[in-house]
Image 1 (cartoon, rainbow over the protein chains, first blue to last red):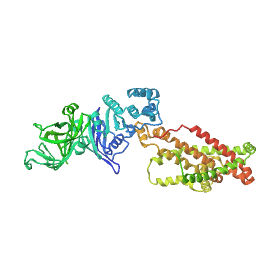
Image 2 (cartoon, rainbow over the protein chains, first blue to last red):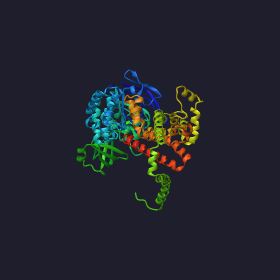
Image 3 (tube, rainbow over the protein chains, first blue to last red):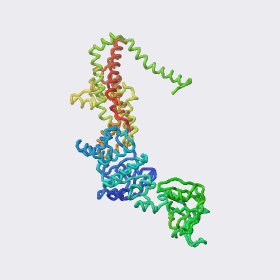
Image 4 (cartoon, chains in turn yellow, brown):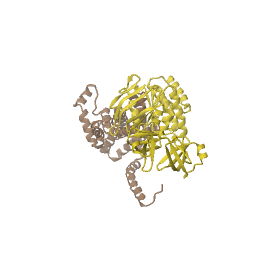
Length: 355
Length: 262
C-alpha cells in the first residue's frame, strides 16, 4: 500500500536517513520515537509538504515522491489539529469536498454523515476555538476523512488529550481502521503503539532502528534504545563473562555491578552490552525457593506502587529490580516497603543486547 | 495595578506634554473657526469638489494598488529569495524620501515626454494634472503602509494551516483566498485604511504632479497663500471633520469582519 524506500530528508541540522517502511493495506502502523526523532518530518515528507533529498515513496503501484501535495490522496491530521479558526466546524469538514468541486448539497450531505460518524453533529455550527481538545480531534479526523484518503497519517493524535478523551479517540481510531482505512500513526507513547498498532517501527535520531509486529519489537528489542524506550525498566548495562572464566558455574554471567551479576543462557558474544529483563518474569518470595531459577537474590523492598498490570515492586538487590505482581499476591504475601524478601528469575528470562 | 512613587508621575507628565502638543493646535483651529464660516465653506462648490476629488482619488489609488500590493506582501513573507532585503528597503523608500522629491520622480516618469507618458497619451490617457496623476502620487507615498501591514498579517498566519489546506486538496490559489487572506484580513484592512488616509493627506508629491485639479490639501495651501490663515482654516477644519467621519464609517464597516489568528 504505502512503501517508502531509502528516504532521506535533509533539514540542515537534522535529517531523516535511509528510511524504509512498508505499510500494508488496512494496516495500523505505528512509528514510535521520542520528541525530535523526526516523526512529524517523516509524515510531512510522505504528505508532500517537505521534499526529500533522495529515496522513493510509493502509494500502491504509483510513485508519489514528487507528486503535488493536493493530489496525493494522503490525509494528514496534525498534532494540534490545524483547524481553520475562521471557518465553522461544518465549513472545516466541507473544505476538502469543495476543493474537489463537490456541489453544495452533496457536500452538506457528506459533512453531516461524517459528523454523525465522528459524533459531532451538535458542533457543526461552532467555531474550532470553542471546542475541547477531543472535539477538535474529531473534527480534524472528519475533515481529513472527507478527503477520502488512501492513507491516514496521524501526528501524535492522543498527545494533548485527557485520559477519558484518549480512550474515546483510541476507540474511534480503531473503528476507522476496522472500516478499512490504512493508518500510519506517529507517537512517543509506547502504550499507544501496543493498544492500536499491528506493526511498529522505532525511529531514533532520524533513523528507523527496528521494524516488526508489536510483539516482535517489544519482546525482542534488537537495540538498546528500543529496549529502554519501550518502557522496559529492568535494563542494565553489563559485561559478559564467558563460562570458562567463571569458576563456580558453567553458565555465562553478566556483571551488572561489582557486587551483582546475573546468570544467563550461553552467548556467543563477549564484552559489553545491555541486559533486559521483563518485570513479569520476576518471582518474589519471603525465602529462597528451590526452583529452576538460576538467579536468586535477597533484597529490600524500596517501593510498592500501583501500575497498569498490577503492582510494581522495586527491590534493591545491589541494583534496583522492578517486578510486577497482582493485587492478590501483594496482599497474600503481606508485602510492605522495607521488607526483606527474595527475588528470583530464570537465566532464560534475561536478554542480552550487544553494543 | 496601583502605581506609586515619582517615576509614574514623570511618565504621565512627559506623555501629557506630547498629547498636549498634538491636541492644542487642532483644538485651537477648531475653536477659532466659527460655525458660520464652517457652514459657508461647506457650501463652497470649489471646496466640495476638492474634498470629493481627494476622497475618490485616494480610494481609487488604494483599491487599484491593493490588487498587486497584497500578493506582493504575501510573497515577501512566504518566499525566500536573494536580494529580499533590498526589495524590502525599496518598498519603504517612499516613507523616507521627501515627498516633493517623490513628486519630481513621478513627474519625470509619467510626463508627456517620457516613454510611459507618450504611451499613455496614445491611448488617450494622461497623468499630468489629472486625477490619474493625483492617484499615482498618492499611491507612491502611501503604498508602504498597506504592504507593511499586510506583511504583518501574513506573518501571523501559520504555514501549517496553509499546508493543511493543500493537504486537503486545495490549490495554492484557493488556499490563499480561503485561508491566508481571511486570517490576515484584520491587518490588511488596517493597511488599506492607513494607505487611504495617507493618500488623502498627501500634499508634496501631488502638488508637483497635479496642482490642478485641486485636492483639498492643495486647496488649503492655495487659500493660505492667496488669502491668509482666516480663509484657509475653515477648509482645513471641514476636511478634518470629513476625514474623521470617513474613517469612523470605514472602521464600523470592517469591525468584527476579521477573524482571530490561530
